[in-house]
Each structure stands twice: as C-alpha cells, then as structure tokens.
Image (tube, rainbow, N blue to C red; front, side, top):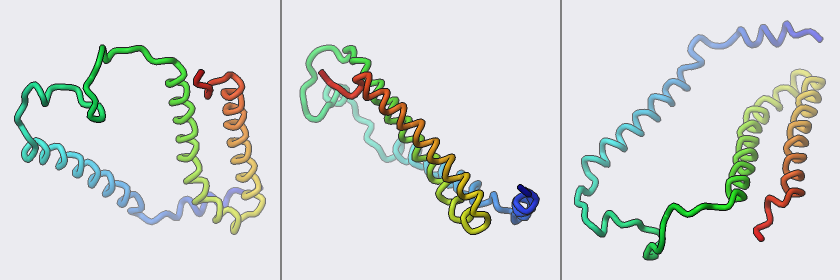
Length: 138
C-alpha cells in the first residue's frame, strides 16, 4: 500500500489552520473568567443560618450527610463514563470516514473493521458487567 499521497495531503495544510482552535480556547477562558468576576460583583453577599443550611430539593435534611453508598453506584458511573468516552471517539472517526470512502475504499474497509472491533470490545465489557449483576439493584 502506498502511503505517499496520504503523507503529501497531510503536509498541504494551510499555514494558520490552528488559529480557530486557539481562538476557541481564548473565548472559553475569557467566558469562564468573566462569569467568575461578574458573579462575585453582582451576586448576593448576605449570609445567615438559612443560607448556610444544606438544600436538597426543598426537603429538610435529616441525619448525617456522610453516609456510605453502595459500590454499585460507582461501578455504574464508571460504565457510563466508558460509554461516554466511546461517543467521543466516534466523532473524529465519523468526520474522517466519508473522505476515506471517496479516496480509498480499501482504507474505508479497514477503518470500518477497526470501529466494529472497538464497539465489539465495549459490548463484551457491557455483557460481562451485566453477567456480574452490576445493573441489579437488589
């Protein structure tokens, strides 16, 4: 397989193709900074016993807040994060895949096989967790 045309296409990037990313980072940092500054200037400053009390959906708090949770809650949270990260990997693949189909159909087949393998590995992990009873709340 000849990778020279692919390498030549990678070298042909415009000179300032990174500028939108830097601009987005600057806007994000500026937005976060302005929110912190404005909330300290405009926000309420009064405190008291009512303001210091824990608020949970309008219910009066009863008992200690440092109660132990079942490990299953954390395991389900980790499984959620795994599938959340999976979605993050799908976006770049989905943007590159149509170009790969047009340029080199054999490369598209390899990319599709890699994604199917990735999903299959995650599916095996999901089935394993299901078999261990992670999703049962007895």
